[in-house]
Amino acid sequence: LSQDDLKKIAAYKAVEYVDSGMVLGLGTGSTACHAVDRIGQLLRQGKLKDIVGIPTSMKTHDQALSLGIPLSDLDAHPVVDLAIDGADEVDPFLNLVKGRGGSLLREKMVEGACKKFVVIVDDSKLVNFLGGSGLAMPVEVIQFCWKFTAARLQKLFEDAGCVAKLRMGEKEEPFVTDNGNYIVDLYFERSIGDLKAASDAILQLAGVVEHGMFLDMATTVIIAGELGLTVKNK
Ligand code: DER
Image 1 (cartoon, protein in one colour):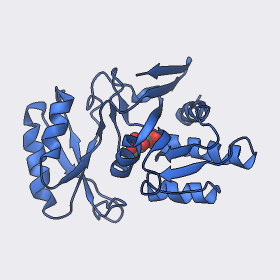
Image 2 (cartoon, rainbow, N blue to C red):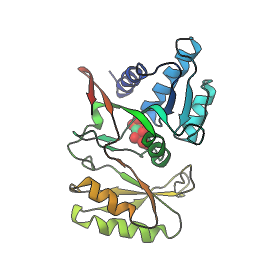
Image 3 (tube, helix red, strand yellow):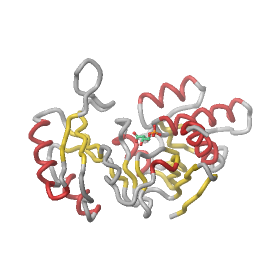
Image 4 (cartoon, rainbow, N blue to C red):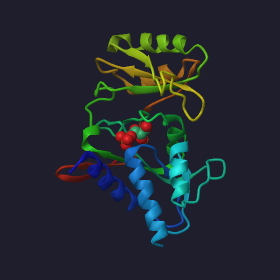
């Protein structure tokens, strides 16, 4: 089975949690993409009815629109029944790193407003501690003096051997999020220790909008591996 096959298996399993009439948070990324496709398919087949989708990015908005999924937003639906989304890392306590697709702010807003947050991953995303994969832990920052903010982020985690890098988009230009902000990716050599303390410290920096640690937010994590599916509940 390819990694994409595993993503699809996890995504389809998550859509089994969807009931007609739900307000759904629609995630962003290659795994969530399969879940959105599946929801569109079930709507077309009449197996799901009266669904309202709250997209977590312009990309998901466009995908859902093309599938005929009725869309709305948090202003109209401040409480979301169920959100389905991928993750970049999942630790043993179901804490997540998200945002390598650049949508962490809207994802965190939508997923923070939902009663159930089902995370879908292939087993390559499992880590012993967040930041442990050596891959980016994203922080969304305002464009104004981003270098100043990046330097403060790097200093904050110098004990963990942190390097902060501006995320670049196409044509050697900085990546700009749906919200008009930049992303500074943090890379760690060692564990950052207490995640809640790290989260609070990051959010205290004035130039920071949000970070990609989703702590104590997932209610269910569906993991697809070669040996089958594992469902972990909070
Ligand atoms: O950017 C995001 O938060 C995505 O959900 C990401 O975490 C997972 O993307 P993937 O499903 O393409 O690996």
